[in-house]
Amino acid sequence: DTGVSQDPRHKITKRGQNVTFRCDPISEHNRLYWYRQTLGQGPEFLTYFQNEAQLEKSRLLSDRFSAERPKGSFSTLEIQRTEQGDSAMYLCASSYYQTTNEKLFFGSGTQLSVL
Amino acid sequence: DAKTTQPNSMESNEEEPVHLPCNHSTISGTDYIHWYRQLPSQGPEYVIHGLTSNVNNRMASLAIAEDRKSSTLILHRATLRDAAVYYCISGMTTDSWGKLQFGAGTQVVVTP
Image (tube, rainbow over all chains, first blue to last red; front, side, top):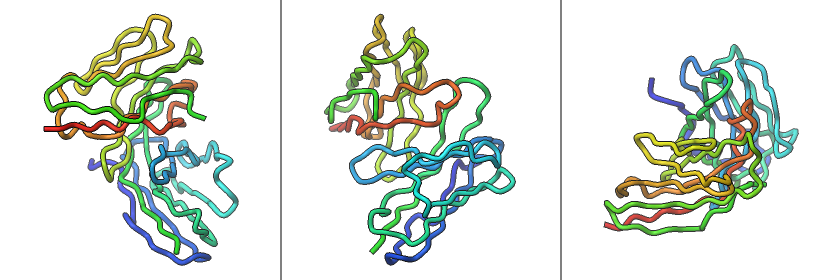
């Protein structure tokens, strides 16, 4: 297992376009998280799934953002009608959750630039 | 809002220990203290976590104050590969340890 992988690594788009990112978690991990990170700041939680169920969405996640995790495996994060303020690093993480000692394993992220 | 306070940056010489402080004065009795680090151009990486007593693993040691209002992450022998932003995180319930509330962290610079 090579860890959490994200695709693409970089995405440049024009304002108003839609973009979609993919995350492949570590196999057997039942939880998957999306975070967003802007330059000089720590990552901010966006949403997470347990298996295929989306359990929580941050208020940071506007209605232009949608995330899915069909069949509880890979996940996609789509941003519709992108804005310049959406420019950031989008990080995916996965974990095997039981009751305690949950540790997140992060991917290297997708860097989005909205022109 | 992040519930911890860390210095913005720290410098260390290679092969010397690094002590990274963290204040979490509003911590509750059941909150664990987690540390992650982020190397350049990578996602964060788990380092260590603890509740009350000191903890050790292959990466680092975590010393927790008796009143639990502060803690220190100890890198015993810094290497150039330890140059990263280190995040001290607390305040999550045990069913939501994945909802990490990152602050700005401490930038560790290691000089040869």
